[in-house]
Image 1 (cartoon, helix red, strand yellow):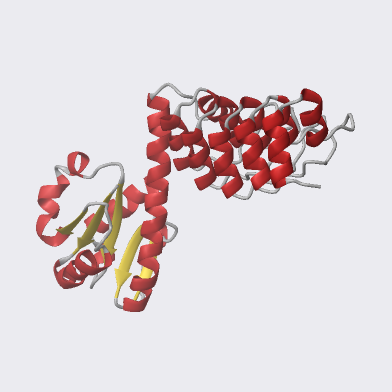
Image 2: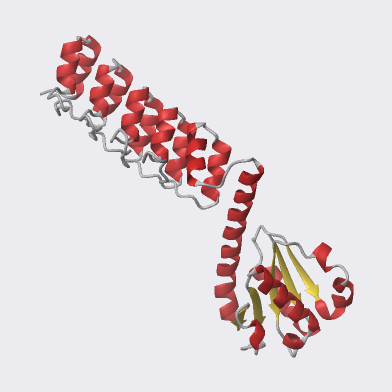
Length: 301
């Protein structure tokens, strides 16, 4: 995105102030153009120099609204369905044909308050459009189903672009499986971190297995990812459709590392599954002495 600050001869000082102060710190490049002095030269080079992603800010003084260059840029913005910000020291009279295109800012306070808001909106739109274009250039459909496929395929770059483009980190696939569960099943800690940072619900339940991402970690023996989920507030006693908790699953898989992590986090060793057996009973049944000792240490009766 490029910011163009356009003005006539009388608006030069105000335009300079906007570039130096209002646009200071904005990463997008900005350019000030004196249209009274340069319109003739610009008129023959507009297509090459005014890029499609430019956003227009006009300083209105005198009869600037009646000038050919104002009409040109107001029409350009109208055709692109972009707002043209027009600033004046007082309320400016904008021709009715451009009333829906021009965003008037009157006075210093209005400029200081509202211009950053519009620039923030422009930057957000720019990020979305850029991310969408990059995905399409990569041959990746811009759909929720495609986002889910990218998580399963551990395509971190594409997932980041989908999130940048505005897709929710709580998107689900056709079977009702949340992205975070898909990342857990794929065993990808990096993607799990990205999704958590983007707002994924750590306790969202999948429609197929009925469990959370923590349950999927237990099934895949992904203790490293589970650590992230526990720090993010995962329910340590959540159960899958068959009533099994992550601790019961870990005991059944002889996963001592995962079991200890869950017990330290307060997992209930005596909560039964659908068959009526608890993690403690399974530990005794499978005769795993290390897990039995862990239960005695962290979950003594």
